[in-house]
Image 1 (cartoon, rainbow over the protein chains, first blue to last red):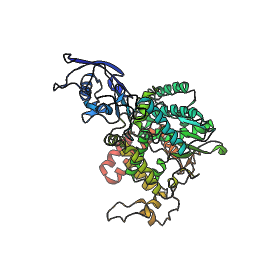
Image 2 (image 1 turned 180 degrees about the vertical axis):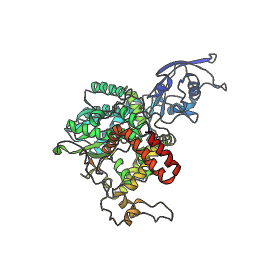
Image 3 (image 1 turned 60 degrees about the vertical axis):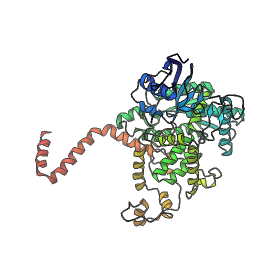
Image 4 (image 1 turned 90 degrees about the vertical axis):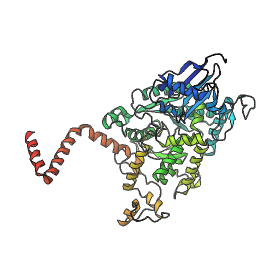
Length: 107
Length: 439
């Protein structure tokens, strides 16, 4: 994997977040294997990448607050709560499924 | 990181970190634990009686969808003997509610429950789209909230159902506790923290004008776990925000709750418990006995603006509505606030804004010795209300007045202005005369 320039992952948005991503729930992405500083790409980098490259809505603040995922948005890494996986520091692996679920929208 | 095993079964991979106790559970164990806890909430608070017919206030959103799913599961697993039906309110918001109602219709089929949809137009003669056209986007949530509360009760009465359950979760209750704390409204805090409330219901037939019981079986369930439950059980729910309150959570007590949760997840249930404890301190509160031993249940709160009810969300205008509420409290004829404040109130400093009871005391009105809202009937619609005219009728009156009189009122304003100017300024006088002549 180390010689690969990118990591193939899938991301999914739900709970209303898909609105920020062109009403598309699932994305298959090729994310750079290393972040801006040459370190292995982690979830923090993925979030920045999503904001810059994938999000079509200008309202970034509905997804990100203080450089991390907004409180009230759940992150599931291969179905597991990201808090069990090291949160933003989790390093992306090939074929990972990263899901963002908003709890903030209408009940 | 090596996968963490489930704290309960020790075999499956843990997927869920529970906010209330940090336990790590696998999917299967989480679903069981979540359901069992709701079962405990139901049994320890004696929410249901065998054979009871219960309407689930269903919006198609995550909370009510999870509530319907869990109640169906528990009703079968523990043989509650309940007759569960779905009751949905159609506020008349194109592109939002009509979509979410499609979800409710699917849920009705999936869960095999009877569904009744009741529209604002048939209840009030106004859809929310029309209300917004009339009053604008600001403040329309007040109308929606007030109308919705009555709508659920009226719908229930129509169906002959005496008990409505709603999907309010722990985050919702914590938010309400904080909002009432910020308002300084302990009596309301006391009423809203109660897991069971009763709302008087309107009916043309006075004989059937019975109390409708309300309860919140998800009161101790974290919003996070509700969403995870829906996710892991693949429940079909609708999650687009109301088009009239976009970005509703910004700057609201909601955001505060979510930030607290990020720092210390147990904070949400702690706020709920604090709310309950504070409620016990409110004189005359039924919470003193735990809220359930008294046959005299706290009266349900009249909806106080915002879509904080079935939708579980309050609006960004929260803080503004606090101020409005404070102003309203000052003029409220309701005496229960006075009793609250009189005894333990520290003396006010000079120049401090006098509390409402101070004014009344000067007028020589003796406060009643009741702490509860005194419920009477609304003179207009017969719905029981603490005021002479219920909130819905007050709002409707405003709407109906504004509809045909719009132009005439503008005319009045101009005249009044002109009259005022006449007295003050001769120039204005002259100008105005020409303008009248022109007309």
